[in-house]
Length: 70
Image (cartoon, rainbow, N blue to C red):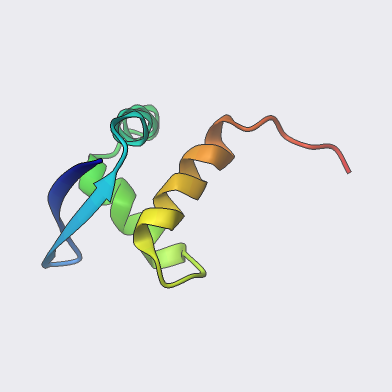
């Protein structure tokens, strides 16, 4: 696990994720033209559950998971 401290919506928070998830989040932020803290803030604001780390992992999964046809 790799712990990083970020300022999200004006407050400092620490998030622990596997290095592979940090790399994927950085790539996703770059694709979207965002800074990593801005991407994390967007995910934080739209998550359903109480756990930010889980929401970040799900965002990565959703980005690279093939779209399923209905």
